[in-house]
Length: 296
Image 1 (tube, rainbow, N blue to C red):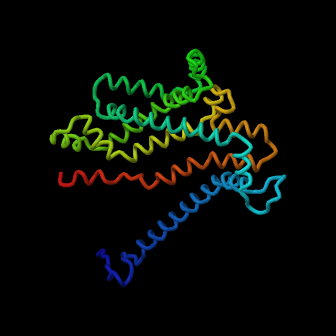
Image 2: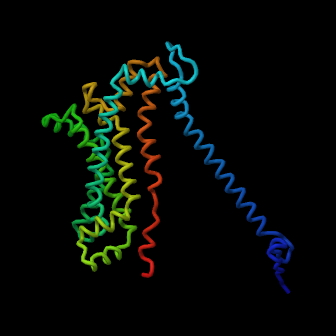
Image 3: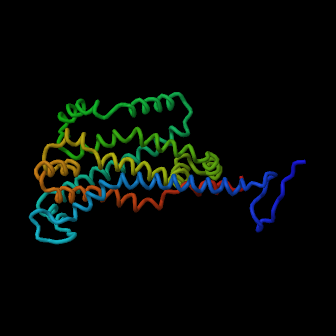
């Protein structure tokens, strides 16, 4: 007769009829698998971070004509004092922050309509966004340049910002709609019963529970506008209107042999995204919505 002996919890593992220790063997195999996955992720992360670490190290290394020894901030000081790095940084911040604010302000209500609407017009609008999202920005650069040239928006930060907003709008709307889908409509129905309007429930209920989605959309718009080089090189001509990616490229062409100064300017370009992620990381949370339905 088959039998299984159950040992006392403190006396050892469960024994099968063959006397084996299968639970412990399976547990040890799972632990080894987790360690292998962790080691693989660690190695891949280290490989990815090597270029960044080299860039940072070169930025704080004394230049060929420097008398400093060890790590120094001399390269950063020279970049800001001898180039238009401060102007390029300001231009990038203006265009990027404007893109983020406008994109989120427009994508949030548009995404709400996609999430809650069920009409043919909404479905057609959703399909149109999908088609526009699949088109690369390079296909519209030349027509936009001709159009903006006649409107005086070439070599202008306003024209560049308009293009950034248009290029981020489709994906931003889809991102907001996807997050709004995760919020139960019963929360809005409860607010409607309490006398709240549709717009009021959107602002007071949906948006308040959508902070991770809003931040994800804002970060997407921020990175797209901050890192863009293709659109900027077509629409910007004056050195004082350059954004930081164009400034880095221009500075590199003029100082190809001075790698420490070039890397110092590259570090300046890397700092804002790092600061944004470090500041907003703690606000990413998908919890808190489920508790709203307690007792439902």
